Image (tube, rainbow, N blue to C red; front, side, top):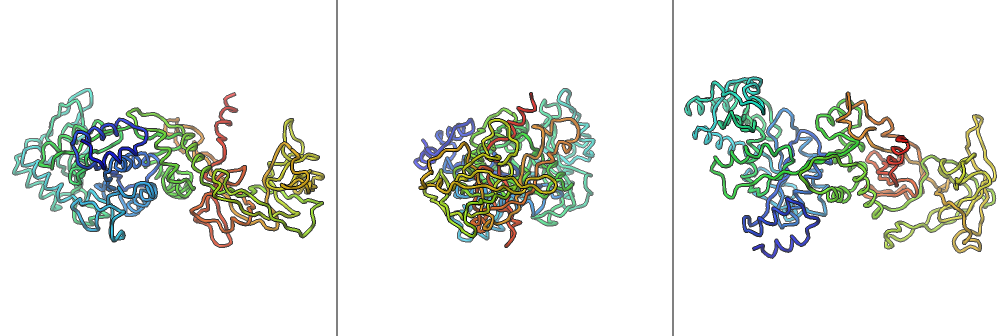
Length: 594
C-alpha cells in the first residue's frame, strides 16, 4: 500500500500523464520505498526551454510523490565540456525550481563519490554542496567493465571509428563481426588495462560489448563502451585517458545513485534494450532502475540544437548565451520571464509520447498570464511626443493617484506627478487619421489616464515637416472628483510628466526567427533570423522607475511588460521588453495570408 507521506504528496498532483501513472502504480505495488528521478544534462552548453520540460517533469514527480531528484552532470566527453557550463546548469536549475521544489533537489557533499544524497533545504553548509557527476563513478564503471570482460561479454577492438560504423551494417541488413571479437579474456583484460594506463593513442582501440551483430536494433550490435581520449577533464583532471560512452555510463550512474525511474526523451527509446542489457549482466543493486521515454519539446520560431545555438553565439549573431532572444534558460531569465511562467507552460503542454511542434504562442500565453498577475503597473512613453497644456498653470505640479496592479488590490496605489508639459506616445497622435481613429488628432479629445481630458488645439512641426509638439487644452474639471469627471471620451492614453520623467534605454526583443521552423526550412537556418528581433529606443518613464529593482516585473500601461537589465547602472537605466501585452504576430500572419 502507498504510505501516508506518499498519499499526501500524491494529493498535490497536477494533471496526470502516463509517466506519473507508472510512478503511482509502482508505489502502490510496493516496488519502491522512495521515488528517485534525475536530471542529467551534459555540460557542453547552456540549458534551454526544452530542458525545462525535463526539469519540471523529473523534479515535479519527485515533489508530488515524496521523492528526490538528482542533478547530475553527464560528463563523459572531456573535449566538449567545461566548468562554465556546469555552473550555468546549476544556476539554471536552482532558478527554475526555486520556491517550488527545493526540498527534492538532491546534491552531494563536495568530494563525495558515493552517490549519497544531501537535500538542499536541510544542508547545514550549502556552500559545500555540488551536483552529482558521472565522472565521480569512473572507477566503479571501470571495474564493471572488467567484469564484462571476465564474463566474455566485452572485448577490445582495434577497428577505427569509421570501420566500426561500416561493420555495424544498417537497419535493413545485419552487421559483420569485428576480426578482434574473439580475443581471449586474458588478452582483453591486458589490453584494456593498458588502455587505461595510457599506452595507446586516441582512436586506436575501443572496448565494445559483445551482444549480437545481427540484431534488428543496431544499438545492440556490439556497441562501444569505452574510447581513448588523452584530454584534460574539467572534474577529474588528467586522472583518466579512457572515457565511457553515454549509454554505458548513464544506466550505471542511475544504478549507483539508486534512481528508480530514468526518464528520457523519445530518441532514447531505441537505446533502452542496451540500458537493460548492461544492468542485467552486471551485479548491480536491486531493484534496477527502469527507463521511460517522453516526447521532447520542439518550439516554433527558434532553434534548440546546442550546435546551432553555439553557432549563433560564436558568430556573434546574438550577444551571448544569455541573449534574451535565445531559448536558453539564461536568456529567458535575463529577458525577465519568471520561473512560474515556464513551469506553467510545461504543465500546459503536458507529457506524451508523440513528437510535435509547440506553437511559441502557448509559451507567450503562459508568460502574459503570469505577468498580468504579478507585474507592477507604471507609466512610460517609448517614443515621446511633447504635449504642452496651454491652460494649465506654468510651474505647477500635482500628484495623481495611480493603481499599482488591478489584479492585486493589496498592491495599493502610488502618486504620479502631473504638470503643464507632458510626453505622450507618438503612435497616440495622427494628424490625418482614418475613420474610427479615437486617439488624439487635431480638434479631437482623449483622456490622459488617471488625469484630465485634453483637446488638441495646435500642431507644431520642425523644418522637415515632422510633428514635434502638440499644444492642447485640458478640461480641468474632468479629473476624478471634478465637476466634469463623468464626461466620456472614446479613448484614454498614457503619459508622463516631462520635467519629472527619467530617461531609459528600452531594448525591445521579439522572436528570433521569421519562420516557424527554421530547422526545417530550405538553406542555412541563419538566413531566417529576424532583423527586427531587437530594437533599441530611448524612452521617458515615470520617476518611480528610477528605483526599479531587478527582481520586479513592470507593465508599462498600454505597451508591454519590462524588467531591469543587468547592464543598468546608476544614472543609466536599461530595460528589456519581456513581451507585448497582446499577440502581434498572429495579426501580422493573418494580414500576410490575405
